[in-house]
Length: 403
Image (cartoon, rainbow, N blue to C red; front, side, top):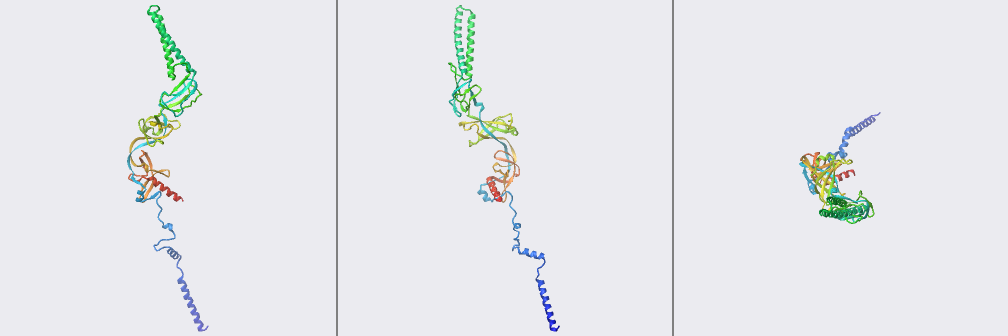
């Protein structure tokens, strides 16, 4: 090889070495460094990684929470109060029914077997005492009238005989024993007349003549509440023709659980609510049943109420509220503040962000204040008025999450 060729080979080797060095110097560093470099490429100018937005999001809102500032609270009319002690009386809320006053109700029957001739009244008719309600034709009535007439005739004859015998005895014409016999016969006739008259009076039958017609009259002022009798019907003394009730006062009978018997007594104040009556009616417990119902295992509580205008009608449903003895309770809230959420009593507690639904365990209540046994402590601020709006807002929020 010539000297020139040798120099060229050396030059080529030098160039190859330089190129190799340059290639090795431009090769990326270790995989870890490359990963870090790739991570840095995804960071913004503030050092936040834009590949994992969930990791960078704020923590979720508090469950059952409602965001509301002070201005929004006032605009919605939501009042704030603090849980605290109060004097609370147990209030029993009992289902009840309006009934007729059984002490002022009369079931009328025929005085004897017979046929109904006429019934000039109907169910709901207002009647006055002594008013004719039905006419019955009965052979027994005709016989009783005849018996009374016969007894009266015998009494008149016995009186005449006694006067004659008395005159004869005083003149010395007849013996004293004849006068005594006539006097005894007069007394017996008088007894027969009184017995016949009392029988007619007891059955409400007017004396006189031999008619078989008996008029059934109203024994009191009231209303016909039942009338099974119709003209032409065969009746007897064992079946009622109609029922008349004085509705100027009514009974309100409520069902009392056996566990609450110790809290209720005669004379206790009661408030009665009826759907047809816009205001509560005030009364007092007149009777507490001594025996429990076999099916219901409840006792009957009776409140007697005046019924001017007959607004309260038997059969109406009602509720009776009985206020028991009051006791000091350490933690109470306004009864209107308690809402039912997820089938549990709930109070909306005031928080820095708004309100939070807090489940509570309630105790006694008098309708205005309710005892809180757990869930809220004394001094806790809560939504006293307008809490139903918070419940509605929370319901909308839950519906939105489901969507």
